[in-house]
Image (cartoon, rainbow, N blue to C red; front, side):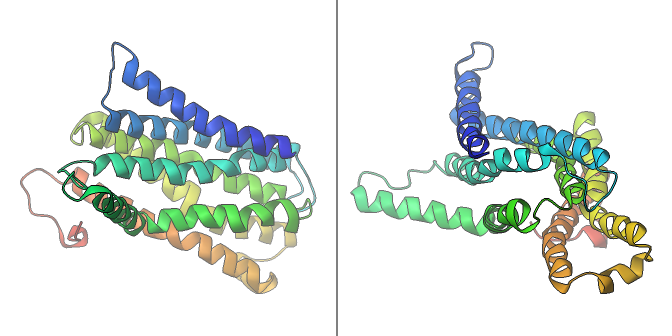
Length: 276
């Protein structure tokens, strides 16, 4: 299985590099570096999301007994996909870097010291802006990966499959960012994509956790409200820690939807009056 991990370490960076090169050099596109990096990174994320959600659907629908049934894809895809989260931290930083390579930071007057200062300023800005996402990716690698391949001991593939299906919303998120990059916020495509993003995120990331509790309660013959008291405390804690950032991101999506569907020229209603 270590071969799958190595394959993932090669696949995601190489796929990104090929897409970036093609977007910059294909005669009908010839994007600027900043555009190519953004679009390539979102395409890689979308492909990974499609693979993950497909694998999750296969696993979750194949496991009739939600505790003991196993499917080879659960551990195989987990080991293949974990390098993606490491790669994506770098890809997000590269997008941030290209976005801020303007206005002559670290110019000739400052020399090498100024360049280093500029680099660290960009790194600090990146960590400040994307702290929650970087933390999420680090937890996926350092905590969720060992838990899924070691601690589970082959049990609960159904739940892992459902968790993989949380990626259903990712292609809509990526498309939304690409459309914003090209200032297409007020097109019909962006509005339809925003509605699909909101719905898929709600169903596959927020309501996923109550569904998992309900599924276990049905298996154990317990009502939904009794499940948290019937399972170990560390499981409840883990679920709460995973759910918390999803609720925050869902709030941001709802705030964006308020702005998107608000008629032009009208003052924002109070629920949407939040700072950028």
